[in-house]
Amino acid sequence: MTAYGSRTYDRRVTLDGAVLGLTSTSGVRMPRGTVEELQSSTLLADAQHQTSNTTEMFTAKGTNDFHGAVWSEIQNAALNALNWYSTSKRPPGLPTIGLGFIAGGPAYIPKVYNGRNKTFFHMTFQRYNFNLPGPSSATLPTAQMRAGNLSQQNTAIVDPITNTPFPNATIPASRISPISQKIMDQFLPQVPAGAGFSQFNYNVLTLYNQPYHDLFLRADQQLGAKDNVSFSYGYNYTIIRQPNSPPPNAGRNFLQRQFNFFNASANHIFSPTLLNEVNFGARLGLYSKSTNSVLGQDVMSSIGLALAPGTPSGITGGPSINITGATGLGFSAASESDERVYTLRDNLSWTRSRSTTRTGFELVRRRTETTSFANLFGTYNFTGLFARTGFADFLLGLPSQTSRNLPPGPIGQAPQQLGFFVNEDYRVRRNLTLNLGFRVQYNYAPIEPVRDRTHP
Image: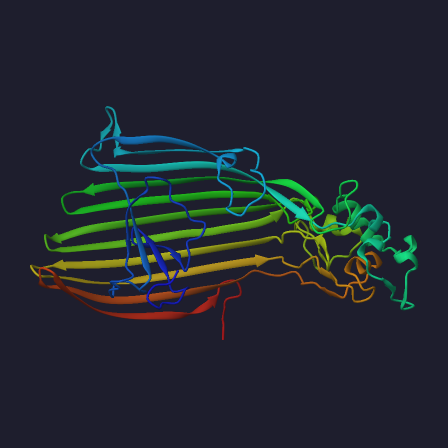
């Protein structure tokens, strides 16, 4: 998202004054009934905001009256309209069920505490369980091809040793790589009987499952006539279960995401025209972890491939086998990432008859760490360089290119921003207001949080 020429990464989203997201808030959800007001400061980008592309969310709070709601909804893919150009049938009906509640009011414990006019709460919750069926297609070798007879490919395959064609376009069984044979036996399913070798000759229905639940809590306390404090907490949890890219025998991919957010603010009224607000917020992660249902060391051992030196145990995934003209084998790479954002902000407002002056500071510290095991178990490309077809090279065990990454360590950065601002809104006429502001922003050099060194 961009606004008025700003860079796509120069975006900020705040929740009750604390930074919720820098650049993106992908994966962050607020339950129904949480956000009471939404402001986008893209047109009037005053000095209070670090960027012209700022979105501010303000959460609902409790009142002296108890209120609440319980809701539920059911979705079913069988009732959805097809794409305009689709010629396929509707997927089978699998319900997606959502439920939640909204509750708020004064804190009240009979005969113990009556928080009317003093203590208030507001909480929201939602839970969904998405079940989305979808077709998965692959181009797989026939039983004849798996045995070495590649006459169905209509290409004269050659023996890379003698540079002469294989008789009857058939690779002898003694020349078929035992590693390739194990890969076919364990991970490449048989195509239906009678199916020839053609594009997408294997089709299966797979299930995408995504349950998640979200919680938000807010408490407000009035401390006399001039002071009040508020605390809020948000929590998201998601796990996505889906099969790897076809063929489906490569296990299932699991993507787990967890998000925690805490915010505390205090307001003090010095006079009817002078107000101070101080705020501290912490976004404790958008934690994300991707794993597979199979262990890489077990896969490599079962097909006869060696691990890279120093490969840690317990890492899920497997090798990537790419075959030109056919579907190969792919496992999702294991990875883990964490992002934290801390905000400390103070805002002093002074209101007069025709003008309002605001001044303050904002300190934002961000910390990210990522560990990715991509290509830890190797990539093997079979392109037909040796025997003229990709699948012939695969049977012979002759990749045209291979690569493998060594075991990685965590990488990350910890940038910090400090800004001071003064902003003046002066009402010249009823329909004309001047907005004048000055902001000093200092961006600290990003620090490597893991190895504790500054990037050049």
